[in-house]
Image 1 (tube, helix red, strand yellow):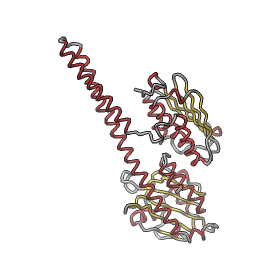
Image 2: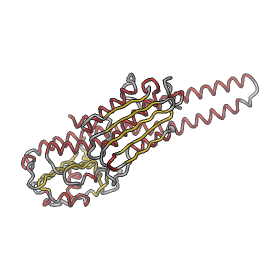
Image 3: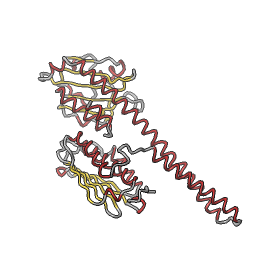
Image 4: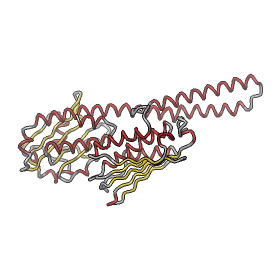
Amino acid sequence: MDISRLLLSETQRSDALRMVAKRLVDVSGADYVAIGLSNPAYPEGTGFFEAVAGTLGVDHVSGRLSPKQGLTAKVVATGVPVVSRNITEEEGYNPPPEVAEAMSVLGLGMYLPLRAAGRVFGILVAGWRRGSPHEDVAANEVPMMEMFAGQAALTIQQVQARLMVVEDRDRIAKELSTTVIDRLFAIGTHLHGIAGLVQPHEAQHLMGHAIDGLDDATQQIRSAIFALHPDTSGQQQSASDKVLDEVDVAAATFGFTPRFVVEGPVDRSLGPLPQQELVRAVREALSHAASHRNVTKAEVIVRVTDDRIALTVRDDGEVDERQPIEGALAQLRSRARRLGGECSVRSGGSSGTVTFWELPLSGESRGSGRTLG
């Protein structure tokens, strides 16, 4: 139930799956847990390490494409699980090269298909070191592990279906914004120019009526675009309450509640769009912080002045230098630039990581309730 809630929350899928893998390590005593997904969009013969956890020191392969080979390819193709007390001696073992050496110490191993709606779309691999005190217990819990894999598969399928809906909405909104809105705006500008050249009063009146109609249509389409991105946190909540909800959700991932500081009239000064962007920024910055290792402290600071809103998220975790800073932060930077703001990330070794984000506030985006643009 906890894992289903985590996967179905607003946490980024990759971060949620890493938490699932870590949780499975905790409850099963496994030394290696990997969740791999296949997708027609990946290069042929490859899969994706969505999450890796355990004591073998290969967590860094999370988020990487890998050859689909050996028992992984067999289980994904057939949907039949493979369980062995000596997994490294199993016929066709052949793990991906990134983890082969580390996995050589395993005794008990389980390759379980992630299957939903009659389709295998991934695999759950769990392994225990030879001589592990948990090995004998785990060997008798294969049905429980298979049930866990089935539940995880159903939940991941729900997440993927939801992501497809979100992506479709984003695509429609982008098409409306970049084609229809731009075209209507161009036509309206052209008509304004023509109206200045038309002399008879009746013709000017008709032209003005047509321009007003275009303006109304443009506004309706803008409203439809924003409706494609509903705010599920509740329309009646204040901005600080919405941010606090995100902090509370992040607490389940961190294992502690990040410190939350508000400076300035955040609940009186922000219109709908700045509120929405702030909540997204907090969510994505905390998701990035949660991807770091050994995080013991995190802090969220929101500052609002007459003309700007700023967010600072700090954590003391360790950054894997081999992993690029992308994912949610790429979207965060893109949206900030589009709205005239900025976003930056600074990693300072022992001093942790600081994510800084800010947006300008015009008169229309403050307490009037109107949106930017």
